[in-house]
Image (cartoon, rainbow, N blue to C red):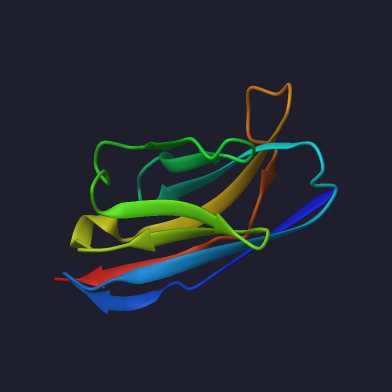
Length: 117
């Protein structure tokens, strides 16, 4: 089993920055990628960014390109969010995808990010 724990959410003003972190524990040896997703009230969960664990390649949703950066350090995954907008308000989830899988099978509990305009 894999456990994912997010932290770093909070209430900020438009234009501010936040850094989310995700700590993974358990059976992570087969990790292929880490991803960040978000879900705003009344909306479906959407992809934000991902990082290929071996190799470091990254992908971003168009809505966050140039403002958000996904990274890894000391086994943790981070999402640096700059120039936050009110529309970035959502619960942010960290997820892990195993090698050989097409889906993210492991999810954290989520951390709330609220951006006031």
